[in-house]
Image 1 (tube, rainbow, N blue to C red):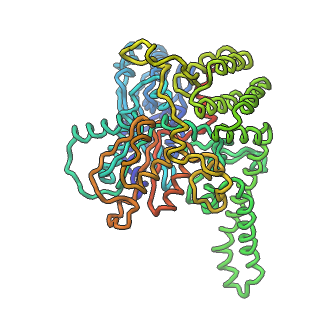
Image 2: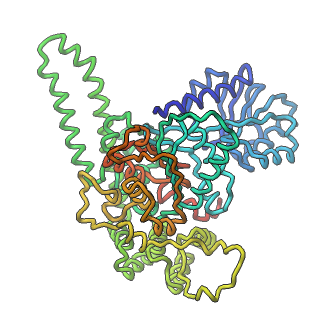
Image 3: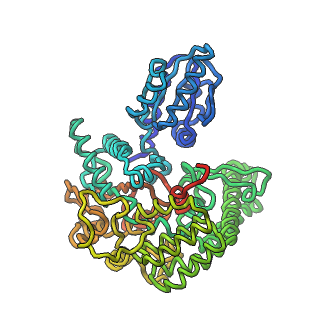
Length: 594
């Protein structure tokens, strides 16, 4: 099963779109499509298919220069349609003659067509869609690159993107065969599964009995916010939190490169050094670096023992290039580690981690709240403060009404009253709530529950049943064999633990209570052969796709890679987007100049 088949398919579809407009044409890109498009096709491919100039669509543009044919490749957003309509109307008023094509990614929406019609430009454009759905970021990682999915679905309760997710999974199975076993964890996951079944029913095809993916797990993000909020401790996750990894690309500044300008680096398993260190616990990084540097030094010393011209020629042709490349990569990773340590030293990192671990263990709650209040008074980053506050609320299953009111007032006084909106969002998602002391029988019965009465998070019960908080002292960080190592043994990511339990048990029997507390656990099983049982004879059953609805972190990806190593299976992680705790909280914070 080669995930690069997805790239080939996307290239074919995009080529068909581009050649549908003959001769030279300009391409106007949505800003958040530049990186995905670069990973999928690249600039050279676009030039080969007649693209002359490439522009970025930005607010405030009234018109653009260029040739007589133009393609807009954009997300189907209402404000984007307004920008495009402004371009067209301005250029028509100037007397410029052009043909326009709007290609919506990943699908066109009727509401966008309505905006174009209201703006009076519908007669001047043709509309198409480019299904840029799941594409590979690495050999075991697929992404939709739809970071807005979370706020749209969980916060605004907009179901629009569910169709895109379901379509992506259906198209993946049309390419690699329909998976016989599907598990859904959470309400959103169940909706996606039902929509997938409807799509298969509506477009009945010859059922090919061969398949390359044996099992699919669809996981709701709101099943476990705790692992999303925890501080990452593996190298790849810390890189993402410190520098930001976008579509597998990372931008290192001059501080890391040691040169006058920064550099961009592609982080994939094709980089031998990165493949070995990305899942390492950060505390083990320098010992590995030291060992690798020693290996490279021994390789370099080989030049002193060359006996003949032939040996020298072979060394220069084969070893020297690899040696120089690996030395440069190793130097960059060492500098990145030093930069991360420097960043973490700017605030009270150790005290913050201690507070976080105490919250996860439900210990020393009073001292934890004192530290959080000190962070508020010192006006430490509101993102860090809200991370700890949300962890406190989730692990205590809500703050007391007195604590909630006090902490909310202090935060608003310290950071501004625009954060009333932030507090509303956090409460609606169930991240920062107050304990309900009123009797259930006293509540009025309504046909639809209020948005603020969201699903209760049963942290303590789930932690006890699944053993999510192990003895941190017993966790081996050097040669990890427990999923919690991604958080230094403080917490085991719930979705990963649950998936491991299902794979080991080969049944949902005994997990009914856990399923209820997670918002629902459902299985659609058409094959008896399991993934890790001794009698498994079908290799495809050992290939598992885990899809995170609403985003996942590199910590969870690392934990799933460990499951794959421990149980001898292949796990492919797919997600709507890769996120971090900082990006997640920042997306919920109300900005004054938004």
